[in-house]
Length: 175
Length: 427
Image 1 (cartoon, chains in turn yellow, brown):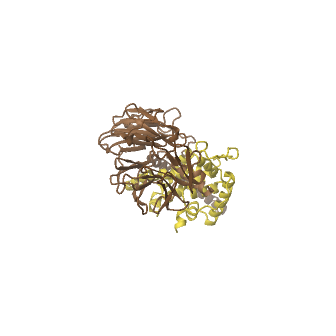
Image 2 (cartoon, rainbow over the protein chains, first blue to last red):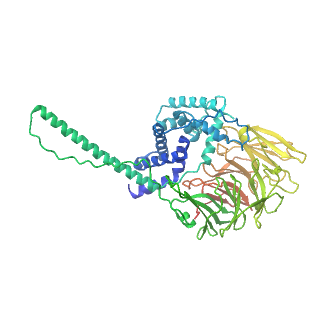
Image 3 (cartoon, rainbow over the protein chains, first blue to last red):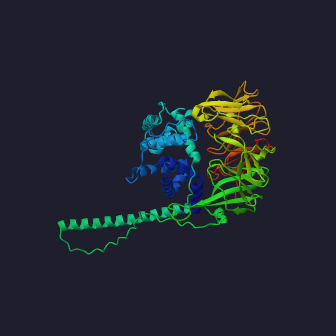
């Protein structure tokens, strides 16, 4: 790689590794696992830097690599996940100092089956449209929709909510 | 609160509270080179095996067709493949580092940064260096340092911080040449001067009422923030009684607290924006609007209580104001490109009375609306390519100066929030 490319790659890592790490973290739910995923993804990005840099949206490209790394980690037989049981926890009574509400919601998200979790994470945590999720996960928009509906039904059950349709993302709402 | 709402809010809060690790670009390059070499070796090995098989097949074919004499072929040389290690060796990480080494380290990351509004060349920054995984089990995994300057880091004093690096450090400048660091997550406070001297602030339950507004700060309360006044000489924080916990207005002699949503009903959880105010005979309460996003407005003029609310999915911001002790509330709807979430929005009045709204997520942005009417307009946005997240975000006013900081960027406005100057040099 030429020095200019090396410099731009360094700059890219400095500018975007935090955001890419966040994606890895919300996908895996494990800080150290997310570090591993990020490092593996950045190695891939480095190896294909010419292609990444030539992409319309290099960050979106890199995020796709992060998501794919996570999915391939999920496929590994050594990756074990613990499903959380929220039913035993006391109901949240509105006292912010008692239970961090967002943590409870997030744990519920992490307990979803992998594809449903990926769709939910990309929708709510990355604010992606259905089209962007489909592109990132390499699946049809209809499949994204059905995973999304299934995830919402399951989350509603876990969190004791009425089932509602997910709101449109900002991009969809303005298009 | 709908499920959709809970998910959106949880997402934002998880993202906000997350601190990314340091990434060693050189380690990425090295690992990439190792992968390439391994692949190259595999290709050589595979090619050799294919070659051997092809030779064998052709020999077998010849045997069946015509028994020619066997021509000895050279023995194929197979390069041994490196065995991928199952347990990675810990990365080398020093057992000690001087504060200056921390600040100068190529992987040093900013924890928080602040500038004294009365002298933008007086600055403070907190740095840390973390080991890269896998870390040694028996050694330190992080070193911290604090860099102080009075000349914009032409020269600096670098010391060990001696304070806890909490996730939400708020830094202000109560006295010239001194910073007050408030750890809103754990409840500690420290006074740091530009010589690098750190004094722990102790709490006393007395109602000291200094006239200098810089000596007032919001400290951690039972419900949300309460009010403390600082005695910088003795490094004592005078914590006012619980009555003032959650109050938008700081205590004054004869003054009464008021605020948004009394304990334990947070707006985000109850779905209602409620105004409360103390009359001396008890606490009054009024529900202003059904929303999950709203809060009080800071620095309102005397005799005025004001709250902001954003409707779900709307980009308008409603200002609820009462000027007659809570008897009547008027609503002033303002449009404008205020960040659509509102989860991390803070609204306060400028020195001249304009409304300033700031959001620190995903980037530091400030919007301004005239007092008399009109939309909120974006007046400041953090420059692109700024360093990763830091803690200690906020918007303050002091002596006619407006000051905002977040994400390793501080910005100062000397004309009531109309134009801003970014500060990004922290060592």
